Image 1 (cartoon, one colour):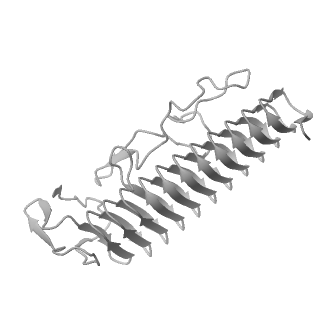
Image 2 (cartoon, rainbow, N blue to C red):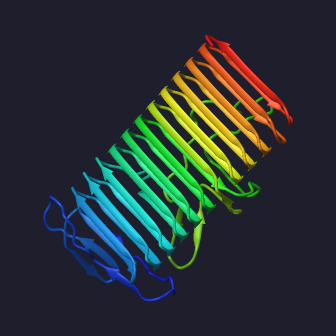
Image 3 (cartoon, rainbow, N blue to C red):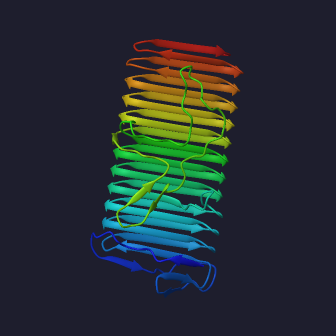
Length: 363
């Protein structure tokens, strides 16, 4: 197996190339250097580019596992544990006092196009952790700013999760148990220059422009990084920073989809889904919005869109094949939809200063 030599062109100080030994069940894990390539005499490869003053810890047990770590700055810390075969991890830190951790147990935990499970931190005092147990799971975290926190935990197979944070003091968490679930959280500032290739938006009637599962979640690093100071992002273009947003997704089941998109400051959103084939989307643009979706059952769909300030929206659906949509413009709206049964449907649009409470079925 041959790998092109990784160039360290940061220009921010002396970069050391470290070839680090690691624990593995297979033999012959030493690396030989041939001109501009690395060639491993076994299927196991571990490569580092690290700067003096940072800490990196790696523990691998299995075959054909790959790790790459890039660190620029001071007092950054990385921890990677991979147990199984054909797992890949990528971590990049530029700044001060960042912490990143990837823990993968299982086989082939990479993206559908071979992307590694990844964490990218550009800034200071950011924390990011990924924990995956199972096979064919994929996770990606990107943080640009300071004092952001992001956590992804997945158990099962074929799950995908991505978190993108631009700004300061944002918190995001994704927890998925089951198979073939997808979750996405984006936290940023103004949305004028934001491109999302994932969950479809709502139309004026509060329904999906494209319902179903014909999208792909933002995967991997989503860009090529040549470590000469240039990036080429493909999934997201996040420009203005957001601050102090909170987002949490928890899914238990199979084939569930969830997304939270937050632009602005001091917004709070949460999604909990228990069952199969459920879909939940929350979009917030402004300040001090609160939104929550709880769904238990199969085939439920809930969508919340908030623009303005100080809006509150909540959806609870228990049963199967229920649909709920809330669209809020302006400020001071309150909407609460509860549906307990099967095949129920309700939508509400609020221009500002309105309060609506709906309960359908066995309330």
